Image 1 (cartoon, rainbow, N blue to C red):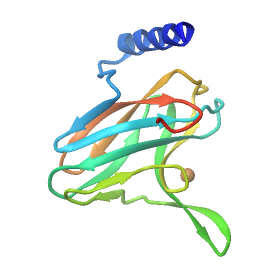
Image 2 (spheres, protein in one colour):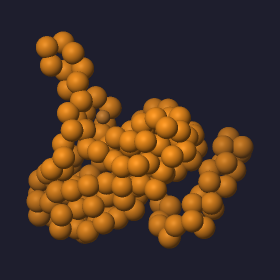
Image 3 (tube, rainbow, N blue to C red):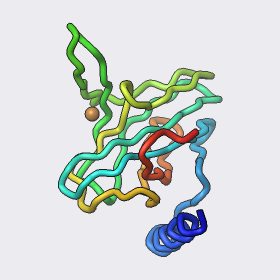
Length: 151
Ligand SMILES: [Cu+2]
């Protein structure tokens, strides 16, 4: 436990030195509460995923795009089963966030796809992801790299 805490603290201080973003596990963009952001371990050169919960306490908005310094680009995808086959569909126009509703990016549903990782994603690290909203602006959110969803 102590060892894990030390590793997290070391990662946090590195990230704090590199980029001025909040290290609290959550963020806010306008009236949108952003929480539970996590990613999975993945090798450099491969693709990673990102999951996050967006609770919109204001007017209808839209997640337009996302980016991160650790990958070439981020696409928004939705996983679904069609004809017994698991498929992923790109959502290039973004994701609508209806007023007063919560939209969860989660395994087997909506997810961020981090395409072309420039470095491996390791358990215990955090990955800064910029989320760009149509009316609520852009916010940088730390995504925790872990094996399973946050409790
Ligand atoms: Cu995908």
